[in-house]
Length: 233
Image 1: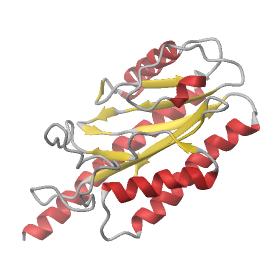
Image 2: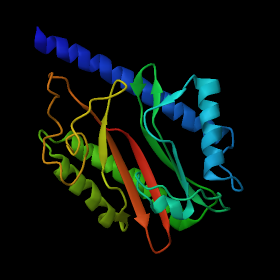
Image 3: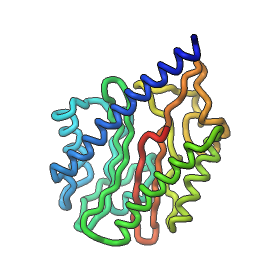
């Protein structure tokens, strides 16, 4: 009975998380369709426009992590960085990383955009997404997997694609807002090089955890980066 209960509960949670992610994807599509990603505005201005769009057209008013718009050299910074606000330039590269909460469930979506047709920037953007898909297929084949092993696999893809891995982690859990928390310094809910726990194991109540996989590739010589993330499980 308990096994069936958790199976049903897990399926229901996954559906709600996928719905939240779908809403985030619709928001990002609307950002493109409305032509908000253009040169001549600051990262902060674009972020404020996205928040306004999310609230007015999708009913999204809450975010579970800080809202990130990074352009140009700021795309080199990992999540924990707080670089100065930059203006979006002609032929720029930028990425969005938003964590909207929809009907009490967390999404976490990251996408990269290239203004113009610079081949290096387009390759960086496309490689980050292709590597994410490759990592997803590899992840699906694992029956046990530590956070450390997952991080090293994902970060190793950067070298294979000809870039450097720019993230401090390669993913984390999401769930019902606010999601599960561990004690200070416990890395068990991050895909981190020092997390030696099996990330495919359920939580202490027997519930499956749901993971976000994130990839950030950077080119420090040309001062550009690309980012892609979404649910992987």
